[in-house]
Length: 187
Length: 180
Figure 1: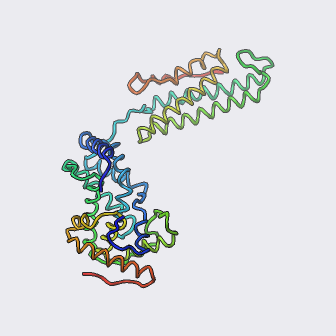
Figure 2: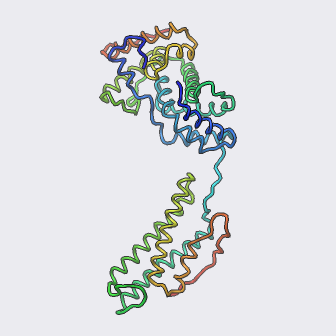
Figure 3: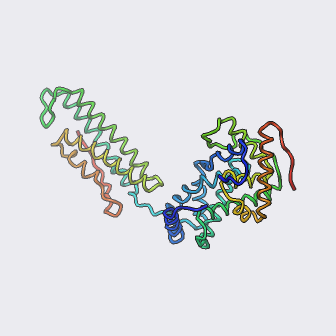
């Protein structure tokens, strides 16, 4: 996930201010720029409640700021931040130790412009109900727009596995949306 | 969106879902608070005028002068048949009373804003709010002093409002008794 050079330079300036001066205003600027995307990412990967997702986002920022001096700008700041968020999601999923079916009345509060609200909620619910490994690949690939190579690198799995998870997740999702509840759990 | 696999209709819909979600209003506050506790962020130095008890008392005294002066002026001119000074339509006591009342209300609103913004957290808000509040205050005071240019007490109102800035000499908090 690349960023324009101007954004990157601005990010560097803000990060430098945080590191040198503990500048609150610089942090708020960085926070406001990256949090909506980070929250969207974490919410869908976690398939938990809004509050659980925000807790992970909060921890992501804390961990990121603590490790800010180690960030070498080999990737864009947003990509690095999402990597931290992803690791925390994975820790959280392991901690919960579950492939659970989530039932929430209002899973996401954003609006997809192309879908009627009831269809969007069905779709969001169905994504939440996917097994974790399928959901993670689906979100990373189809929503976040990552390539299989990037997903494989992030998850530490072969590219073929990423592709097969995606294929399965699409198949499962299609069945869910056509009214067949899929409850199969993968090891 | 990647196209390395065949995408059925449902999957296209997935790709169209929003990537961003608005965080709750309290999250930013919680994150900043946590980072301050860790010592990663530092509290910003506030550059606003602190509303000390003395300063607040001074501002309140100015307010009383303005309001009481305004009402007294309204009563005085309403009773007179030919008031002097710069008032163009002395017979219009109602309009004058309305001006006086409006000036008093503006003053009170400005005072409230000044207190609020002096205690606000966001530096930008503080500076903007303070400027607006002070401008209203000065405008209200100017209106009153123009109505009664010969009144000694009212002539001192504007200098009292134009308090020294944060780095300047603080006001003395001298008490004034105003008689009408």
